[in-house]
Image 1 (tube, each protein chain N blue to C red):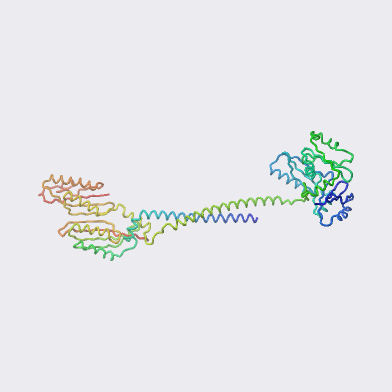
Image 2: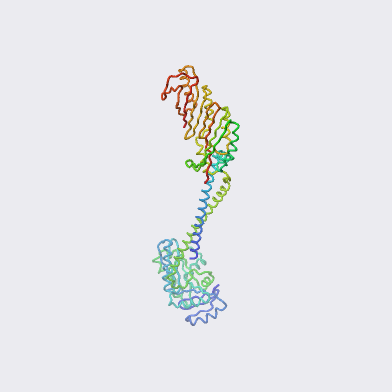
Length: 402
Length: 156
């Protein structure tokens, strides 16, 4: 628990656990040695500023986007920082209403000497009025809209504080004999429902409130020193943010590449397995080119024995006597036949030769038949002469197959 | 700056790695496709491959070996002669080397001619492509003249 140094317009009071240690109305320089005599043994101080003109200033702001709020707060802080001193600003929100609350202690304020001194004792600076809502909530647990706290000060005057929720509506230092009606009168014109929804809490001893503040782990609205900011800082912060975002994007891309690589790796392993599994070409086995060359060479190849067998069947069937057979292989096949025929009459010879040609067509349906020499040179392209008929008549035929 | 540098380095290294892996994948993919195509080709041409292995399509066979083999045909003929002409290149049908050879003989019966021709086409150590077959009946018997091209593939 901290010792509380309660600073009012008339003087300061040092209290510890609800007990007043000393009350002084002299200047800082004169009060300091005496106060220090009470603060031996590593005591911590809570500085409660309870002066007029040190009340918080609440500015109602319209509903803004979060980044606009951040910009507004940034500019407000920058503006206060330029002036130096002590202060703080933040947004408070209540029932869909947003306010920018700021407290400022300027550089020339006599309070700064107290604050600097309090820092030697790990001092915490807070505005007394702003600790009141928490105190009332803890003590009264009232649900009324308006709250009023009245407490006496060591000088004999009283402090009137009126709140609507978290908002401080009025903070007045009034003579002891004046009651709260005057303070209410100030506000009743603006807040018509003030008298109906008001809860008044009167303290006979301010130490109850000081004890509460001393026990608080954190003050509701702790003040901080304001120092002019480095102009480069926002730029650096922006650069840092951009660099972080950029880094994030790069790392994200990198992870994407890594994921793709890992996916490809599994495919590669499968392909390597397939490559090993596929039988390599045996040594001594002909190459594809060699096999293709052989394929081209033997395309349309026909076993010569087949032709010879076919011809021997044909000649046997027709009862002909083969004299000469010549088979030549080029683009196609050319078979030259010379054979002997025997018939008693010329008409019978002609009929038999015709039958032989028909049989040839049957055996070689796609072939072209060309009579080179008909029996007794009787074909139209030959010279047919009357001669003594021979027993065996030579005939020749050319069979051309594609 | 360090974070940014690290991130850039990380991204670049991963991208380079991915490119390498992609190239490797592409090469392997092509290789496997070629191997598969080759395997399919060899499967469909299995019979040709077996024939070519048996006949000796790639290695040149000595004429002396071939001549010795031809002596097996001598019993089918009364007179028997063969001629191997100089080897020539047949570029029209691919890088093929062709040796024309002529076999002439006289036999008593048709059957002997057919049997010798059958044996020659079936068992001769090399790929033979017939060019001309002539059979003439004469007072001495059946005169035969076979002209073949003894082919082999020139790998070079």
